[in-house]
Length: 302
Figure 1 (cartoon, one colour):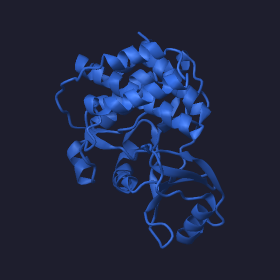
Figure 2 (figure 1 turned 60 degrees about the horizontal axis):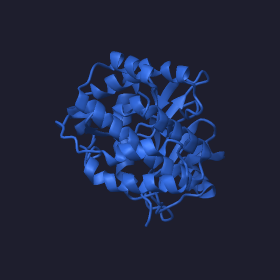
Figure 3 (figure 1 turned 90 degrees about the vertical axis):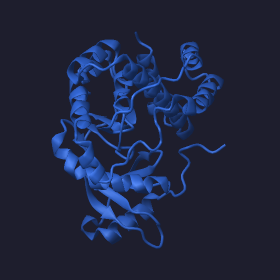
């Protein structure tokens, strides 16, 4: 069975260099280095100053276009750096889709952080999401941001996939607290919730976060899943990134939410993190695999 992240198009480094230098001669000669692969894009750093993302799947093309319309109006309003698009590549005979170049957000993905280092970011993460979730959703609509067409909080729809990945984790002996995870998945019951319409990042997890030299969160990247939906989709990060003490600080700054939203956020954190475990294992990404397993530990920390 194919994985959700299997690529339809892979842009090699030499081909990326050709595409960039042809369409943006001011960047020539372009020094290219691979930053990584996501579900949707192949990502290169260019001349140490820019990042270019090339869609790997046709599904990602529309997501990229939405980012290009929204992010320029959003960047100055947020308390964390985001990758603002500045180069807009066009399809050609060799590559059928548009691609985008951004200012490089300095820093690294979070890895091997102490609980104290995580807690230090609780307040700024909360302010970031509070600001984002108060962005006028009607304005976002006019900029092309869609509603949640994927029903990201539909637990029963996603439970079979979750069970598949959890079974793989057991077969591969990846997680030391497998029984706790399995008990949680087995006990999942559908949560009936009231729809809410706020602007959400849509895919907020450790691979889409940047920390500075002090391991403080300083940037949020990869906005391809941005949409108008329920805040729990983003609030999952309070479970997957913060220990319980940091969670309390986060919600004190963000504002209180109802029990239903907490339960949805925890479920979304579990689902996203288990998929991240499967993806990082499949890609041989040991650093992200280790970080994702630590995220699971945090989710189940009382």
